[in-house]
Length: 421
Image 1 (cartoon, rainbow, N blue to C red):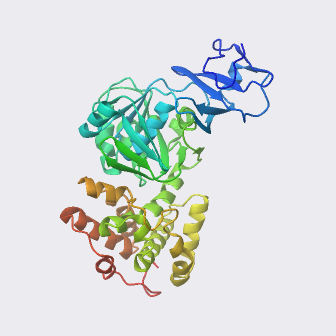
Image 2 (image 1 turned 120 degrees about the vertical axis):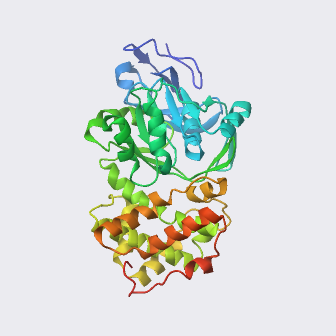
Image 3 (image 1 turned 90 degrees about the vertical axis):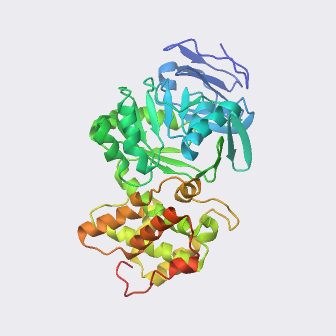
């Protein structure tokens, strides 16, 4: 039963039945969870003459979002049936963004967030800003967790993981819990409450902003790294990959702990923006703050290595290791100008720690710089840069009075004699 280009009519007769396409036709449909995930684009590779439904689940499909008439293809890599019910617990910037994308891809997803955010979504939908484009996504949102989820995306901040996991334990479900926090503790904390067999880890290489209730913005591209933090949860990873791969670039990593330690090094500088109140594009172009950022990362990498915690083999990790290996002056000259990355000088984006400060939320700094300070104390290695940022960050969260770059830099000395550089 062939289908013309851009038609939304399904061509799947049922599980195990054959899917047909011929001639110049470029359309295919896949049975996925609660509905059909449609794929249609003139640029699709050579026509499929006959394809068993059992093989479709592992086929890379080119998809068009018909509802928005977006010509850009969405690559959907499916490894089986999509979960019928997905819950995003802690729907702020990241959780709302991921949940909206899943909803657009056809998943049955529900956001769980703060009352004001939920009220705004229920009234007007979620306003999603993405690289200059704005669209409104209408999806279910509530403030309470039910027991019907197949996968729970845990997107609360690091300091809220244990509270959220106790809430999950209270509904007595067997849902897979995907930990999506900064820092390196969330997998262990979640497993201590829910059991390691339910936990899958996800490292977010993605920047997003919670602008106001009902409004979030994606600020950068996305890479999600997914892996099993415990051997007993390895069987749950495939379903998570099947869920996330259609909406964002997603990769399976063999050692999620190493990926977390690598991401931690990048997050150590969140404190600089929180303390000064400066957006990342401006803060890391300040010469003195860039030097402080380099010193902080170098100290973090060296402390982690001394404590027996390795980074992964990614390009970013190689950069961090090189940064720690070279003399401080050379590292500053070589890497300082690159710290701001893709954020232009006029960007208003501030990382998650600064966003928490502005909203009056608690601080995750104990899970970032505090991780390096605690490890340094345990192995007898001074960590003056991370300790200094942790102390100043706690003070700013308490007083809500930011420091100027000059005031912050007075607390630090740079030079070859400084241990940890």
